[in-house]
Amino acid sequence: MKIQMLVLANSKKSGGRCLAGIRTDTLEWVRPVALSDHNEMPTDSCFNSFTGKPIRPLDLVELDISEAMPLKYQRENWLSNPASIKFLTKVSVEKAFPKLETKIDNEPWFLRDSSTKIDPAVYRKYKTNAPSLALIEVASAELLTNQRKSRRIHFRHGSTNWDLPFTDDYYQGADGKLERSLLCLSIGEEWQSSYGTSDQKWHYKLVAGLISLPPIEVTPLNTSVADSLLAICERLFQFTPYISEERNQFGRFATGGWFYQGIATLKCEFCGNSGLMVFRKHFRKYAREMHYWGIVCEACRVGSDSKIFTKKFVRQLDESLETIQPVKSCCHECISNIKNF
Ligand SMILES: [Zn+2]
Ligand SMILES: [Zn+2]
Image (cartoon, rainbow, N blue to C red; front, side, top):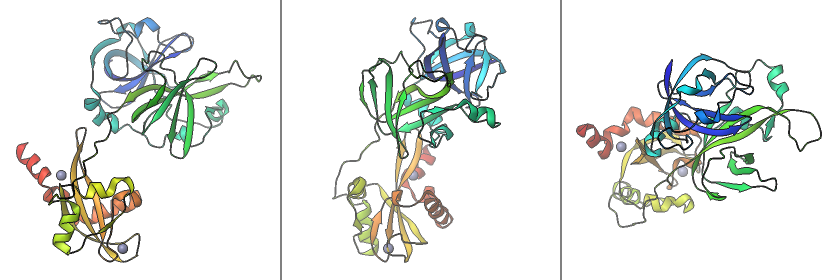
């Protein structure tokens, strides 16, 4: 079967390459494997035949896969014909992101503990069908080369600081700090560290691919804007909300583009009174239309973004407002988008 795959990793492994990506038709993870000692793909099959250079993350390739060959620790493996791999095109991060965003897993099971390796017994003991590939977004990271000349990547995820092997040896960037990035994580085969003394083998957690993302746009501070959250609140309710400087909230609420959506009868995080006035502002992140939150308590007059609330609370707030006044029916930008469609 011929498929197209958006490559997210082309990293080194014993005897060849570990190629992994997402099928463009089903958005499922695929790790094409060959019938070889370590299921590795031959190195020479992972080249772009036009440029003679290695296939890179965000390259779209076509390849033949014949059957699923799941291993307990790598369930995404598919038997494939290495000679069939064909480079099609390079996809820009802006174009790829909306699809990739749906694959971002903010809590992959193998990052739940802080160990950098997995005991193979875990797989023998349990009938596991856990994924061995994951895509995460990090606000920053750092690449470095350790004393053993191995490339490592440091990043923070949840409350853990990770230090994992970075196995994309074709990555051109120098060691140092990285801004917002997508990391393609993979679980390696059983492997015995040559530095240890015991013959215990482990599955190591690896970062097999790295994609730099453009920074999230920060709107400039301009307090005189008539449709800032502050100005609208003043106009409609005759008071200026108290806003913390944290996360540039004040700056964001002082810029234009806000509109009032409605009032929800949910309890205020600060004073416990019910009555939260909700302001929204349209923005576009890559190809997705979204709306910032500005939540102002009627009673204590504290205003904030949605970050201080739990996801569950924001969902409740969203649901309750959508029944009163759907955001798309009061957002000028959404309305004009529909007209221009
Ligand atoms: Zn309050
Ligand atoms: Zn909108």
